[in-house]
Length: 133
Image (cartoon, rainbow, N blue to C red; front, top):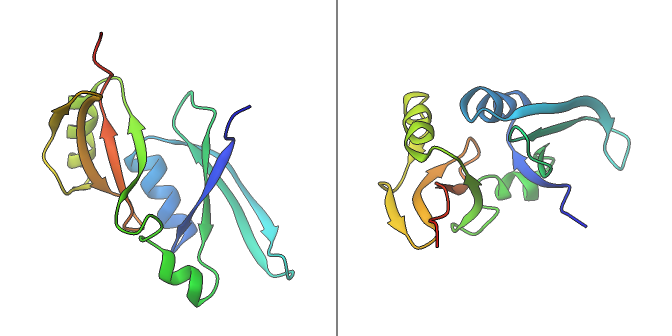
């Protein structure tokens, strides 16, 4: 059993794809036409880190309630955690591509960490490798 994917509400599909694929280096797994539950057109957009099995479904906000949730899906807390093999290279590449970091890198018992903001305004931890025991 595993989590296959979860939805992340965004303002715009294409801006979301650009951020996750071009900036973070995720793979675009799927971008297909689909329909809402009431028959209106939408897209089924799935991205994931290379080699990962769990993916993000980028869901464009539909209506006022969903629009209010963009960037606040975790009530201002860090809600997503991206672990990388080379923290310093990933941190620098992301900064070079304009990713906004809201903390400086620091060392914690679970690895090096810095908090960044995604295209929608959600907070993520960029995590380096777990320390060896």
